[in-house]
Amino acid sequence: MLPLSPITRHAVVKIGKIKHPVQLVETVDNKGNEIRIICNNAKVNAQEISDLYRNRWQIELFFKWVKQHLVIKKMYETS
Image (tube, rainbow, N blue to C red; front, side, top):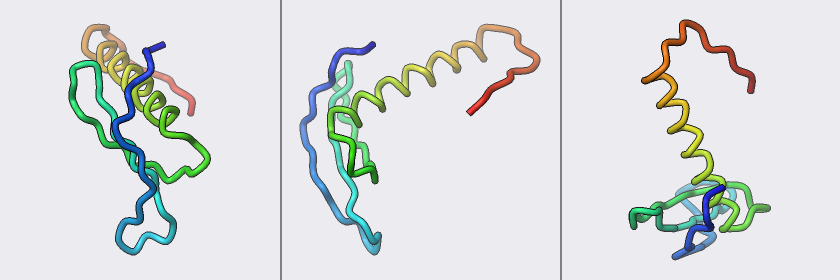
């Protein structure tokens, strides 16, 4: 599991004509790049949103590596 990411900003914002407000979470990745995440789930706190994003990104990178380096004719998945 990745270390906790520093939250630089957390705000509840309303965007345009969207009925419900959303959470804006700004964090910094391991390379110092600023990441902005918008989430419409009000039950999740900013740290959880940041950690979920970072962990999901690691999964995406893993599957990218698998597709590039392994010869797989068919890949079965479940949601």
